[in-house]
Length: 349
Image 1: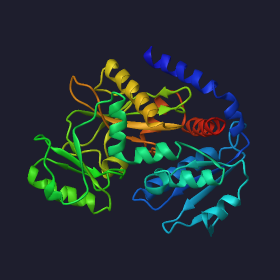
Image 2: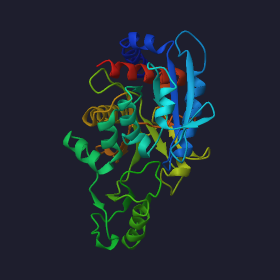
Image 3: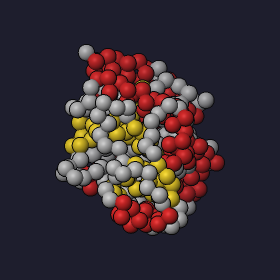
């Protein structure tokens, strides 16, 4: 009964954007993927999946879907032709909607968003401000904590790792402050391992965020909607890495990686409702648009603890957002069309 109610609510949210979905139908959509971040390969997979979904021809979808790869050197490749970003944009109609299949780096930190805004082009996902904020894990923690969301004790390290004073005795999570996909992230059990873990994060050219490790069930909850419009939290996903592992690159993207359960198998209905409430709160507090996916640890019998929010979460066969959407009755193609409609809605404000 709970699941049927969720689908009904989702249907109402979708119908509220009917006129924006009509504008998507018949439009030109450019799917951007690749980029120069450490998440480039995942972005390319997202681009392939989104392009395939939108290329299906029917009355509800775009008339034309143009894949654009941002190469590792920064050039944009359109129909096999390499060109400067401004030239690539100029090749497309002014009404084109850019679907951002980018992850990490300039594709997610507001740089590409800012460029497209200077070109007066519509794009999916959050704007410049929210993108820049959410890429900075430490800054995001401050914002969501102010909104009443629990976060783990943490410290930001930008210099000598030996100067760090531990804030926990039960383990630590050490990660680049602006990184993604768990690249250069280390779970540390012993204090004498902290300097090497911090040095690993610092070697990426970023600051190191050192958090007290919270033990519990890892879960994520996605939200659809623009910050100033109707929002819908999707069913949370429970993440179960292999014994002794955490949700690192291999556990995320390898076919034999972590188990992912949607609906969660180890969380009560009350815990799932709380995760949904917190994900909505994070989305609004950070000013996210389009879609987001917030990650949490749920301690046994305790309040969920926020880890980070993804403004352009993956859209691949192994990704968590499509899994949650499917559980709530939204196919991958419908999810992509809804993300486009949300971009049109945001640009109409």
